[in-house]
Image 1: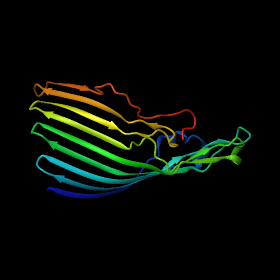
Image 2 (image 1 turned 90 degrees about the horizontal axis):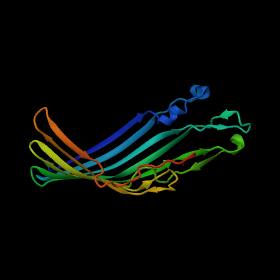
Image 3 (image 1 turned 120 degrees about the vertical axis):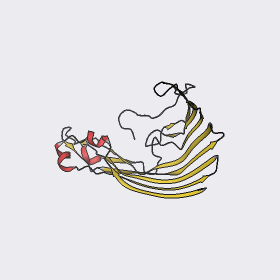
Image 4 (image 1 turned 120 degrees about the horizontal axis):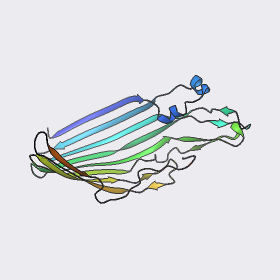
Amino acid sequence: NDNSFYVRYADGEKAPDYAFFRNYNSVFRLENLRPKPQTVEQWELGYRWKRKSLTLTATPFWSRLANINSNPQATEADGVTLYYPDPIYNMVTTYGLELEGEYRFTERLKVRSVFTVQKAVNTIWKVFVAGSNGSADDSYLDFSGKDADNNPDFILNTTLDYRLRNGFANLSWRHMGERAGNIANVITLPRFNQFNFAAGYNFSRTRSIGLNINNVLDSEGVMTWRGWGVNP
């Protein structure tokens, strides 16, 4: 068909992050804290337009990840007695649009591109801060409404592909957009590009050769950031 549509809805659960189980290390927590699964809710609306040499697809989406667990722990004013404030359950909401296109120049040569623009927001995000006098002066930092960390605003992946009867060669361009480096949005990680090349040839059913060169232009980019101590 020249035109096609679909609607997809997903509602599921997944295990808490590793950090939950890493801190699941006391008798009190084993007896009083039960793992609460994270919830994942997602909507997608897809539209595809197809011609002989060209295919275009547009997919707006919305998703929400909830029950992102944090288990605070602190020490009373005596400097010895541990206490455990109530768990914090954070939430991140993401919405955006994915555009995909493929154009076939010839039977052997084609280009395919996938572009995503998105916005990820901390719907609820709080961080516990222990005071100096036990539970009496504890506080919380509230970063709700700020951009979620490590979620790029743009992602682009474009590949030029050439096929032979017994071989292939392709060149891809990947663009990673800028994104918040931490929950407080104090740091912004810059956008960067990367080019990769791959080629291969089959001499027979049992003999072949391949070549892969990642980051052809030796570009540099920061994928993530982590600071010392509290990292809001």
